[in-house]
Every structure is written in structure tokens, then in C-alpha cells.
Image (tube, rainbow, N blue to C red; front, side, top):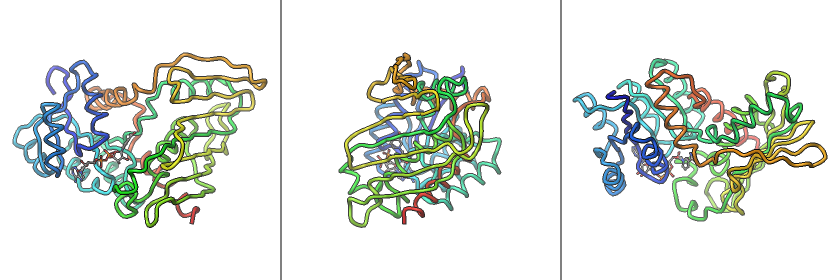
Length: 334
Ligand SMILES: NC(=O)c1ccc[n+]([C@@H]2O[C@H](COP(=O)([O-])OP(=O)(O)OC[C@H]3O[C@@H](n4cnc5c(N)ncnc54)[C@H](O)[C@@H]3O)[C@@H](O)[C@H]2O)c1
């Protein structure tokens, strides 16, 4: 590491890689993109051109360059989940810290292998990019819950849904490559958010809908049950109602209900966390926009590696916990 600068390699130069390069660009020079890997030349060349990074066609060639002297402090893995096992193996072997996009894997078997790999290589920092953990409204909501603002917690409701007709022809809805549809893609964010704000959970009911023939589900409606008490205001048994959709009207909302009031956050009104008492009397609490989440997440990755800081980043064990809920919900839906 030089002058505190944190040099990352982006593996997979598709859609979401741009959120991470924007996060690096917003870091005031602390985080720079030094390498990019993508088997598709046009993808890697475009990202390399925009960031000044060195381009590689495979993780093996990147690791070889690192052992020959290329300075790199961490990898941000943005491939489809089915490509991650080989990349994680190479990263752990080269002792390169990893921030890996969600979900951890496309199958529960791969999720278990990855979590075991992280335990075995515990000195190599490894995280899953569940970025909603870095939405300031969600952090404040957790604090307010623990202070008793809404009384004893009853229910956590979260909808992440919109219309994505283009997904019908992409790997996202290919059952083999993706391992799941709307509930894995959008719903894994919701499950991890439940775990971060409320605590661990189990799936207890699930209904999936399929708009596209022979493709993954386009909607998931899943009921979770919290499994662990926290402090005075989070009992065991809190309900989680998770709504995920790829073929419906856009909604990105969280409502957290207690026996003395509720908190709600609409991602389309990003600066407002709303508290309502039992009579419906509303109080608007100003918060920073969720749009800071990718920048905060990447800074937390740099802090975890450079300063060994304890961070709210999801671990591979957290990724496995979300994968286990996904697996159970998928079985319940059948
Ligand atoms: N955190 C979020 O809000 C968020 C949003 C969108 C996507 N994602 C996640 O990010 C991941 C990628 O999604 P995307 O929308 O960028 O997909 P994408 O299809 O746009 O991009 C994936 C890229 O990975 C490349 N790739 C495939 N195999 C590779 C390999 N072995 N090595 C290197 N590169 C490889 C592809 O060529 C492609 O350029 C998914 O897991 C998705 O769920 C997260």
C-alpha cells in the first residue's frame, strides 16, 4: 500500500462494476481502480479506458501479474454468481482481500464452499457487497429500534421490485447460471437487510410467480421468522415479509412495525425516514440519501483491509445465511 491509497482490481466489468468505479471516483483519490478482468474484450477495455486500469482477460493472468509485482490491495468481484468459486480460490491463494457482489453464490453448495474457504483463510478479509447495510436510514432505524422508539418489534416489511423485461434474455433468469430469480436477485438484499437490522431468520413460507417460460421466478413473496432476541425491543419471532419482483410496478420500501409505532423508508424519498405513532401522527427524520451506500461500502472495505477496522460489511458467513434462507424459500415455493 502506498500513501494510504487503496488499489482495487474489478473482476467482471458489467453493469454493477460501474457503481464500484463511481464509488472509487468519489473517494477523493484514496481508492483507485488499478486492474480490471473480463473475458469479454469490449467490456474490459471500456472499463480500463474509463479508469486507467490495466486490463486482463482472466483472474489467472491478473494473479500472475500481481506475483510479478503489480500492486493491488483488494478485489471487487462483480461477475455472475456462478463464476465466483474459481475467482475466490485464486484470490485466497494470492492473499488478496475480496469484496464480492451479492448473492454469495448461485447454489447453496457453492455458498457453503465459499464460506468454508473464508474460514480456512481467515487472515484474508472477505466480504459480500450487501450495499443496503450502508443506507444511512437503515443504520438509524436499527439504532431507533434498540432505543425503543417503536416499542417491541413485530414485523419487518421490505419490497424491492421493478419492471425488468430485459432480464428474460439475460443470465439473470437462466436457472442454471443464476440459481434463482427475483427473490435471489432483489430478495437476497432484503433477507440480508432483515439479518442486519433485526437478526438471523428462517424462511417459513413462500410463493413464487413465473411470467417467463423456463426462466427463473419473476416474483417472490416470502415470510421469514426471526430466530434470535436482541436487547429489550427485538424479541425472537419477528415476522419478515419480503416482496421481490422483476415484472411489476417499481417500489423500493421498508416498513418496520413495533407495538408503539412504526418507521418507514421509501427509497424514492431518500432523505426522509418517517416515524408514525400508534395514532398515525408522523414525524419526518432527516437522513442522508441511500445513494451514498456504494461509496460507504467501498470505504468500509478499504478500512477493513488497511486499518483492520471492524465494519458492518457482510461476511461470507452472512452470505451463507442469506443463501440458506433463499434455498429454504425456494423449496417452500415448490
Ligand atoms: N448490489 C447491487 O445493488 C447490485 C446491482 C446489480 C447487480 N448486482 C450483482 O452483481 C453481479 C453482476 O451483475 P451485473 O448486473 O454487473 O451483470 P453483468 O452481466 O452486467 O456483468 C457481469 C460481467 O462479468 C463478466 N464475467 C463473466 N464471467 C467472468 C469471469 N469468470 N471473470 C471475469 N469476468 C467475468 C461478464 O463478461 C460481464 O461483463 C450479480 O451477482 C448481481 O446480482 C448487485
